[in-house]
Image (cartoon, rainbow, N blue to C red; front, side, top):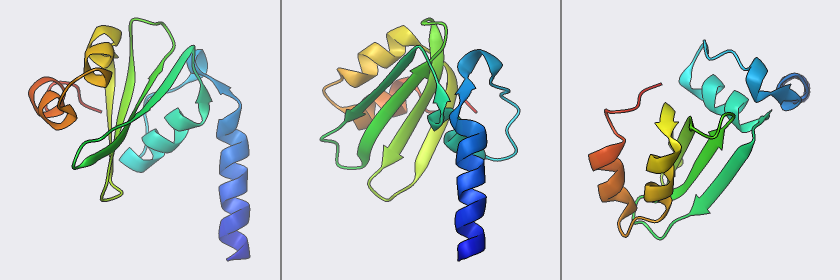
Amino acid sequence: MKFSFILSLLFFISCGNKNCEDLNSNFKSYNEAIEIVQNTSFAIEEKVDTDSSWIDSIEFYSCVEISGYLIVNTKKYKSYIHKNVPIQVWNEFKNATSFGKFYNRNIKGVYQM
């Protein structure tokens, strides 16, 4: 247990101070991508809690204010990350009347990691 705490702390310290311009998008795994993106400084970092039946929250991270990373967190504790999502799509998503429908129609299968 002590070992895993130290490992987690080292990972957080090594990733926590990254600037988005220095971010290498060649991640080893899906979970690593989410962890690194969430612990990097971006010009835009937004999170929206939803009232969706299956989406708990959505997050958007962007360096260039044109496109960025989108993370969808479900109520079953699973997260999905998508890259190169245009900021316009993010703005439409966070204001959607149905988050699930918007995700399925406009993001899923369109923007991949």
